[in-house]
Image (cartoon, rainbow, N blue to C red; front, side, top):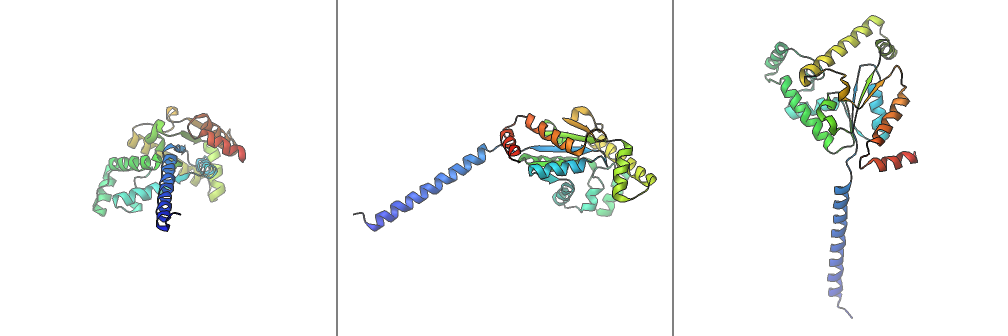
Length: 242
């Protein structure tokens, strides 16, 4: 009959090996688990791009990155959110930047903004399972993004959507959209040295005048499945169960 101490030592060793085996299995699962999708959504203001990005994030359970990127940049550079907002998707003149830097006693130029913005977006995209709205993420990630979407629409369509939300008049709404379009165009031109809406920078371009939100959502899902990535089979199985 074995001594109690021997049984205790054997059991302790067995428990140790079982824990070690579970640890190895967990490590192997982590190493083989495919990185989830990384989606970028670019849009004209009022076209519905934000709505599409939100619906995709909810359906695929993705992290949503929009204004949170501004907060991360501010924290990374020890700046206020308001200071970073002056550079975020806007064109700011060197004179204005100099004045702002004097007032803040800190010189944070547009070239620095691009560098930090690129670093943060790439870090967030590294683990996958995320969607970026604007901020030039499609240009920063390029083909490393799983799917790059752009949503456009006519001025009249966008004005109708904005007016339904704000109740503003036609003149004020048009002025708002024209200013937003101009700021984003200048931002992309000066920060990324390209023009907005260049088709080679996207995988899908939706015209909201012609395609419904449900249609955009379904076409986006089909495009994701067509990417033939490691996680595509799991996504197909999940969608089949919905």
